[in-house]
Image (cartoon, rainbow, N blue to C red):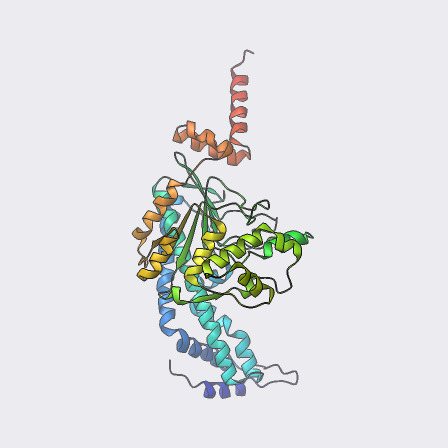
Amino acid sequence: MSCDIEGLLREIRREAPVDRDGVPRMRSVRGVELLDKLKDCIIDAVAGERLREAEEWLRRVAEAYRAVSKKLGLSGVTYPKEFRSFIEDPRQHLKKKLFIYAHDLVRGRIDVDTFLSKAYAAIRTSLRTNLRSAYQVWGLLTILGFLADEGYSLVYPEHRFLNIDRSGKQRLGIIPPNAVLLNLERGFLSFFHEAPRPLTWEDSSDLTRIWGFYTALRPDLMVYGGKVMNIVDLGSSPPIKRPTVIIEFKELEDWYTRTRDLKGYFRKRPLTAEEWRSKWIDGLYDGLADVLGVKRSEVRRSIEQGRSLRVREHRLVKLYRSVYKPRHMVLICRKKVPGEIREELEGEGIEVFDGVEFSPEKLRPVAELLDRYAEFTGADKVLIELDPETAMLLAKASRALGMRYAEVIRHALEKLIGDESPQ
């Protein structure tokens, strides 16, 4: 689309003169259409080709969802608010990002150069964020689909809506899973997408402080063997249960050349003596020092002085492994990874699956790897001794009655004995 930003702006201002309160009053439908055209021009200039690419990626996500929905008998899926909006209409979603800037431009609060700068940055950021989400979601849905092929069924959430968003999930001070799968012969697998996140702890300032130090260290996907309904463990360091497997997704071709600024991940105020003594802090500093190849004292000094700690993305992957210590660490890359980067990661025990693109079959080995870690925990071990049909009936009865397996069995036996007793 060929655009004359200055010309469009003049026409828009004629249709929307600013009143005494500095608010533009659109006098005609044409003015609204011109403003919409202005946003379209900006989007096409910044994201024309990438927007078409995004639509193709979303088509892949939709295909993956349809496949796993049929296999697991899903009732629906919930996505994070931003990604849901992007899925519904990518172009309209990007237009929403320009609303405030376009309004300020019409009012004369910012000039054209400032508008273009802010608008371009907003579109690029939104597009990059949503493409990252699209690749993660595609990968997760594809892996769940392969596990369904191996006999896994969805046992949580019970309403069979697959929850990929985390909105409001942690208000009770726990971190629940996005999904729990069960294979009656193998066991449970519990999935946590983009966790941990900050918790709501009412007036407990201590817990808020502890949590704030690691909210940004958020792997794409953590998987636990067993039925894990809450990963908060304030007695450990870090204060979450150790994940069985961590899976990271990289959708960009040059992801390993990019850096992440860790300055914002730490408190801006001075750290207290109690916090310095925290085992979590000690572990974090050791992990950072290890992946950055610097002394622990340098990391501590940088954080105390509020300086940035810039970490290359492939070293951040190593940091996840160093801090969370999973039994297995997996990296899934859409494009091929250079030999030296791959060698460095594999030398740290990170298994790399690269050149995946959107080929589902290339993720089958990841599902097979997860299958090896499935397990029964606690009272759920009773399922091991049952044939599949009986075990499934027991699981359904447990959910319907809100009882543990042992309670369901005892209740059924008492009723059976009572029914057969002499009158």
